[in-house]
Image (cartoon, rainbow, N blue to C red; front, side, top):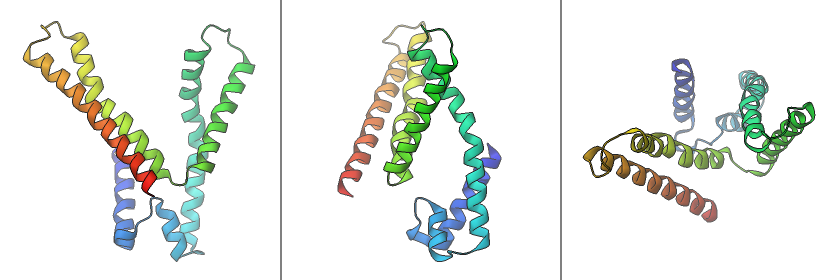
Amino acid sequence: VGLSFLIYFLSALFGYLTFYDKVDSELLQGYSRYLPHDTVIMTVKVAILFAVLLTVPLIHFPARKAVLMVFFSHLPVSWICHILVTLTLNAVVVLFAMYVPDIKNIFGVVGSTTSTCLLFVYPGLFYLKLSREDFLSRQKLGAFALVIFGICVGLLSLVLIIFNWINE
């Protein structure tokens, strides 16, 4: 986690120091525009390509497992089902890559929904479920307020992202 933070922080810092307020959502595209035949930029692009290619199986395993457990748990395990789910997941990813114009749109939706759930909604719900206190106790009312606040922030963020799409 620390190494990942350091890499992202340095990328963001140098991207900002290079372009200031004109940073693209995809930093390498900004560098490619100004340095189209630079060896370092091409090397970084190839490294990212390999990183993405090697990450795909790691991401598809839990996604495929979840789809199989949720939708096909009543069926016996078969290679045909396994392959069809994998191909469907790959097709969905390719369609997103082809038709979503900017990755910031994906990050915005995922961030507005999952981060508010992970930070506000789920902890409050877990406390409400696991606590043996009366519902009108201070702690449970605080947890309930946290859940409501998280839902409101998540919905507001999602609505603002959608309005931003419409205005663009």
